[in-house]
Length: 145
Ligand SMILES: [Zn+2]
Image (cartoon, rainbow, N blue to C red; front, side, top):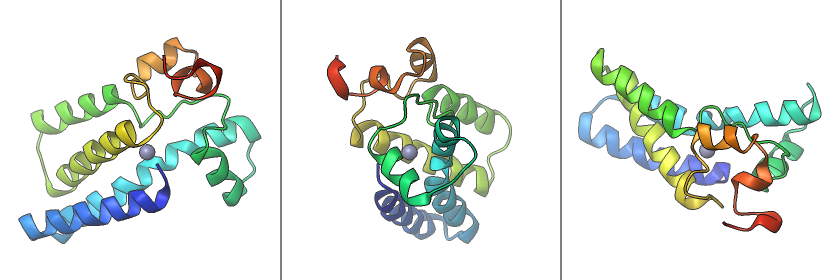
């Protein structure tokens, strides 16, 4: 999903959270995490192009599934469920609750807004597919099977 979409969605969720709980901390944590969780795309970029950075190229490659391998460590339902479990068995504070909401919304929008297969956002699935982009997403000759 494009950065602008994540900004609009994260802002909307943050406004909603602020209206519900009247907490700038909660709303800010949600807004920041909802956008910056996509920083894990840099891992693919650096893996493929080395430690150089061309922001325009980065967005072009990331938004068009042009990486050979897709790791997306933070974009994993498994990690989300582990995080959620840890948050709710320990202590839920405003920052963690904001991150929890943003994380869930971000993954849901990516799951249904991108060229995803049902298991594309499973880390184990991507691992079993050797993190090969063309096998993980509904792209290329493999289509969406
Ligand atoms: Zn994302």
